[in-house]
Amino acid sequence: MACDCDYILPRMDDWEEHYQNCSTIWIKDHGIEAPKNSDGSLQLRNRHLSTLQRDVLYHLGLDTENYDLPAMFGDVKFVCIGGTKHRMKEFAKYIAKVLNIPDDGLPNLTKRSHRYAMYKVGPILSASHGIGIPSMTVLLQEVIKLLSYAKAKDPIIFRIGTSGGLNILPGSVVISSFGLNGTLKKSYDIPVMGKIMEIPSIFDKRLNQELLYIASEEKRFSTFSGGTLAADDFYQGQARLDGPFCNYTESDKLSFLSVLVGLGVKNIEMEATAFAALTREAGLRSADVCVTLVNRLEQDQVTPSKSVLLEWQQRPMLIIGKYISKYYETRYKL
Ligand SMILES: O=P(O)(O)O[C@H]1O[C@H](CO)[C@@H](O)[C@H]1O
Ligand SMILES: O=c1cc[nH]c(=O)[nH]1
Image (cartoon, protein in one colour):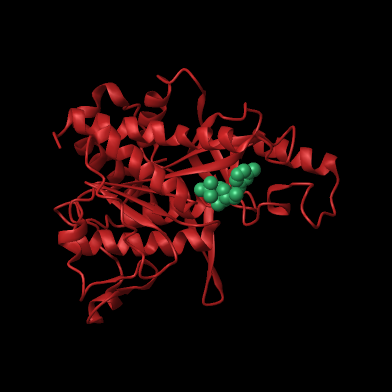
């Protein structure tokens, strides 16, 4: 667990100081050194990087020689990532409105690479990551390097996504407390040079609780905290019966989903484990906030209309928008 305390929003004013203690507890437990500089900027724990004359952030279309990254991104405090370019542009527009910042037409900052989309509104960065762990981790790792080179101070990162729910009403939101991989372990497992490297995939408990507290003020939908299965596939990997291939029965599917429910899993998406693991490794506080589009105990197909789906996708944005505006209300004036 990130921290044992029950420290939630009502006392949010001194939360940064508190977090230092909590993260120290976690770091001691897991034997990971604090990867932060004294000014709160991220320290990259890769000595090979110091031998590079310039670092090319290939998928972002940026580099450390031709761009003044501290001038461009040094003020970033919050990063929000999510699957689609459309959603992340909508989030950028929404947060500009919430914080009353002119949105300057929102140019796509990665346009030289044509791979992802990234927008900046004041101290908020909004970027798309595509589908699944490999696509998301490429974006995430380059964003981590970007934040470190820019010397952004104590940044916090959110994923706003969609998912399949387990036993909860579609349209509900889940804030992940841990990610579970396809073999039901709380870790992100990645083959590195022929061996599996396992990284724990537990989310920051206090950030989770603060977001849950904020979300509980919203009466139009319910928000839950719980585990998230990060599948490597949308179809068989999520025990669906409607893919092009399937050699298990409906009863097999339902038994598997009830095992997940028994493990405290509330939703299924495709990035939670790697997102929890790599942000934790980088010393970046993070939360995965996903709306559910379907109750997977009842159906596999995602059937709500386009307008309903778009409205539901705004729900994680509402929670994060409220969190960010509360942060500035209680701490700083923009
Ligand atoms: O809505 P996003 O962010 O794309 O996330 C979910 O939707 C995609 C599958 O449709 C997967 O990436 C899954 O994690
Ligand atoms: O069921 C779902 C819905 C959205 N995204 C997923 O990964 N699964």
